[in-house]
Length: 220
Image 1 (cartoon, rainbow, N blue to C red):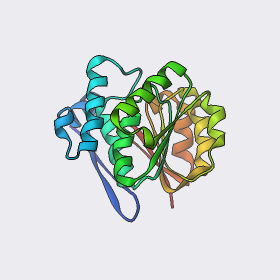
Image 2 (tube, one colour):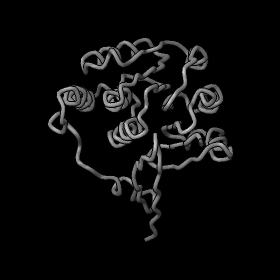
Image 3 (cartoon, helix red, strand yellow):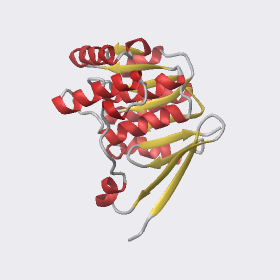
Image 4 (cartoon, rainbow, N blue to C red):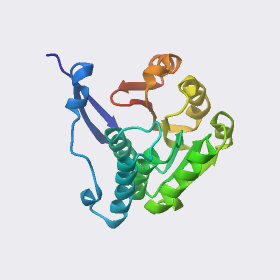
């Protein structure tokens, strides 16, 4: 059984995110298996509040086409490891991934701007953010993100893509100029966006690894 170890060094200064070990595709989940997180896993009251809402969303079916918990943990780790202050998410859905990002942003003092095309899901996400006590950290922008992201002007530390896969390459074109050197572009289900994969694996200014999520570093 062959193993491949990938160590991704990221962040402000030197931040080692971790070693991802995997063998074949059918062993991938087992390689990352870990206990489910609940409110009791928190070490602060603020973290406990967010984890409680995440647990409720997961157990009551209040997620829609959302990432799983292990991917959520990875988002939180990446956000905190690079000290992200400005995070952009494309595809809010009901706020599940945004809450994981917020766990990291609570520690870095950063903010999340998240884009959602569906008004109903955007409204539900706002409720979840408020219930989790992170609504002051999050701005939900409704509308077609292909247009609305063009309003962004500030440097971005981390981008998370989880929306229309055929639009990933366009989001990359529009957001990459804003991503700071050393920043990250993370994508869910990147294998469903071949033009995006081609872009992030062929540009000399980018370094990409495919773990549970596609993680692209904008080189310094």
